[in-house]
Length: 292
Image (tube, helix red, strand yellow):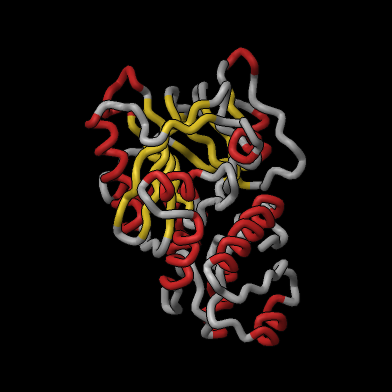
C-alpha cells in the first residue's frame, strides 16, 4: 500500500480498508508502505500472498508485479503484461480498436505542443497517458479559450482525446464475470475529488439505462478484461452520449486495480450482486498466484 505515485493517499486508504476486511476474514495481515526497501521487506516477511493495494505508477503498471514474479510470491490482480498495457492509455486503445471495441479519437503530444496550440479541434481532454484516478485531467471546451496552461508536474508526454459528452458508466469484472453497470452522477467532471471525497458523486447501481446500453457495457467490459489479459478484478469506464444511442457508447480505459475505499465503485457493485466487502477481499486472496 502507499508507494511513491501520485495516487499514494488513495492507495493508503485502499490498503487500510482491505487489511481490516481481511483480518475480519481470519487472515494474518501485515501492512507494508512500499518504499525502496520493498524487496528486503518482502524477503523478511516471507508472505504467503501479497494483496496488492498499490495504485498508479510502479504499483499498477507491471513494475511491482515483476518483482513479485521474481520473488515467486503469489499476488492479486493482473500480471506484468496486462498491468503495463492497461496503464498505457494509448496502447490500451490500440488493443481495443484491434478487437472492435469503440474508442474516442486520440493522439499523443508533448507538453509544449499542447500548450502552444490546439493539437485537436475542441472540445478535447488532456491527461497523462499513464496515470489513473483522473490525476491531471484538463477539459478544453472552446477554441476561443486557447490551449490549456498545464501544471508543472504534468509529464512530458500527454494524451489528447476527443471529449465525449454524456453520462459516466462503469462495469467491474470479477474473473470471467461482469458484475453490473453503475451510472456515476456528479455536478461536473468525474475528477479526483468526485471519485474519493464523501459526497463527491452519486452512484446509481444498477444503472437506469436502456437494456441495449446495459448489455453492451457488460459485454464490452468483459471483452476488454479478456483482450488485455487481466486477472482477478478489473473495472472498465465508459462515456455514453445518449443522443447517439449505442454509437455514443465509448470505452475510456480499463483499471486493473480498482479502488477499494468506502466510496469506491467495484466493492459497491460486488455488494449489490451479493458479495460483501470481506468476501470480495477473501476471493482476491484465494485467486492470487504467480505467472499471472
